[in-house]
Length: 393
Image (cartoon, rainbow, N blue to C red; front, side):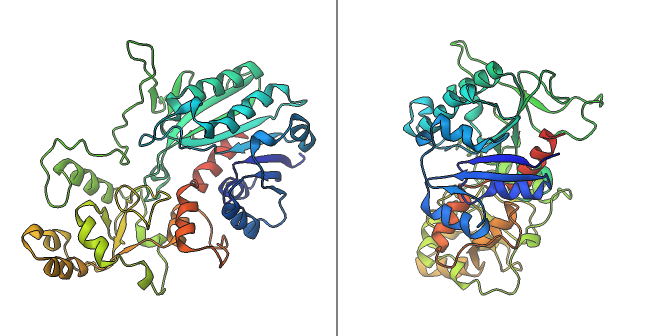
């Protein structure tokens, strides 16, 4: 079998390319396309022999697409039009324009690709853009399956729930295909013959016919409703119980397996101002924990909802540090909180949690802040690698 010719769209720092390498599939990335100049520097540093197009996707003509003669597309379109905390502009958001261009070009290609894999945020599954996407796939003769997956399902202690779609150009359904359902787990080799029904969700509709975004019971990215009774910090008894359950799940690795060894981490310790101002909003984890929240592109610059921080003084109880904190002076608060020795995860550690191997590097000129932004926009390599292998049978 000749190597697959792969087109990598919205290539970023190369998460899809890395997943392709990890999958051990015989393949060549014939072109990677992204307009982010900083991401492109990282991509070129790690994949110097890949043709990299620093141009807009909507600027690529049908002729240029045909000349690449690819038989697989890997892509991770901009997620901002679909995020739960954004404006959810969907098809009206200008950042969706490039993806709509792909849907316009796909049916006109001289030769359709045999395989397609797409990654995006939770929320894409209920968007009008998704509806246009699957309609285009169906019109072109693809069979497809949608997923909502988190790295936790692979034993990785990081919640990063994402939408995935894999599509194959064939007449018969995929062996694990569940029409109209979104799978919540990666199918195993014997899924097609198993009597056990895979975990799925149905995209329901309200009385107006609009799709309702599913509320997943184990989606730890979901924010607290604010109606419960808070314990120490801004956490509820329910949230604390969930975290305890996560930390007792032996199928998930401990965070210490992903941390850097013998490194000077002084630059990552939280500054006093951040400790005092955001103490009640921090999601604190220890090296022995088996969980961490989703790291976003704002990590290191913003506190709320951007990712967990690491408590390096493991002999100090968090409850003791936070006890009656509101009765203390600022100086006393700072002294108490500083005992926890809280720090940000380093970019290398986040890359480890995302599945990037040790040989994947950031060029020296890329700042820590830029690394956080790039990683926050990236994906989990291990999940994509598994989906690639499943897609290719």
